[in-house]
Image (cartoon, rainbow over all chains, first blue to last red; front, side):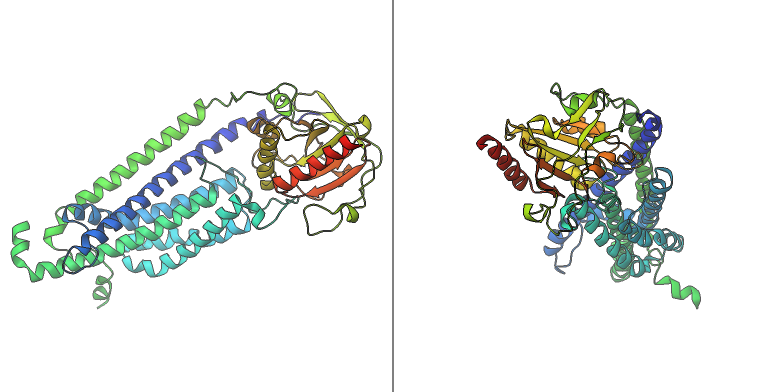
Length: 221
Length: 252
């Protein structure tokens, strides 16, 4: 007569461990995005005080900025890989069936592993022209997915026997669901590929600066 | 020639000696710090999920659905239906069917005899002389997940008329769907109405003509259906319907 829940405890614990880990990575990513936002504001404020009026970080933050730019493409690749492996784990191991919106996000995310992997090997910062438009589409879908999870009555007012897209499979830290984590992944990839692009620009600028100001170069050296 | 083509895309091609001295070091530090943080997070996730105490410490009232759920032995149970099933739910675009359009209004729903999570018997008997609201919910349904806490909050605010009883029926239970098991959900929400467990075939839901989740059947003290609704009914509207049901009984 009864249906016991005890048989699923071990698997549930494993799934809980993985989803908690993914959620913590998402929080870490979100923190990085916020730091980037703060640095952007600092760059705008600092740049407005210079003669060129263009956004520029203070000299003390430049090494950090360049260091991040140097590893941005490999990190973007790792973000895409983590999102892809996490997504496959949730559907193939945890057996959470992906809804149609999940599939749209997968269509965008999975190729990023290949695209960004090759770009990281080739150090091809021009990958931003292929990667960023795609991940922005993914980000838009993830935001829409998250919103209908939070407000399911905006798309339907009742459930039938089919599990809808608004079903919340994972809920961590009172704000993170699967599409929220995916959205953070998309945003991270976009920001990291753009940061890698800026390294190129910085390098070029530095190169121009160096050739124009040999005295400074010698001083630094 | 080809080598030249790629130089423009290489962020490191134009670097000068001034910057290359520091950058690999900073890059290595960033990669190292990232790896270290990820490893720490993995360890934290592992230990946290193994040391989690799932016991709910919230105060649970006696003789409620949540109390039965605390001693859960089962998530589904057999249901006995006595009487004719209700008429099919009409095709409608509104959540609350106007009584004039609902063929079930005025009908007497069948008696449901079943069990709760702890194995205690639960009987929904329209002829027991009490007005009642029967709420059918599915644990995985996002609309039910929104509606149940709102209903409980409404009850906790003291809005439930004394002459109206609330029952919930947990139906369409699916192990592989989110928010399983429903007993845990009922405890989390501190849900006070008694909960009857439907069987895997959804016998109780079918007998009451369930069209979707959540689903509400309201009946007066004479055991006649006065109103049906399906969907995430706004809590104000739900409150108005239940208050009206209570007022009708007090007047009659």
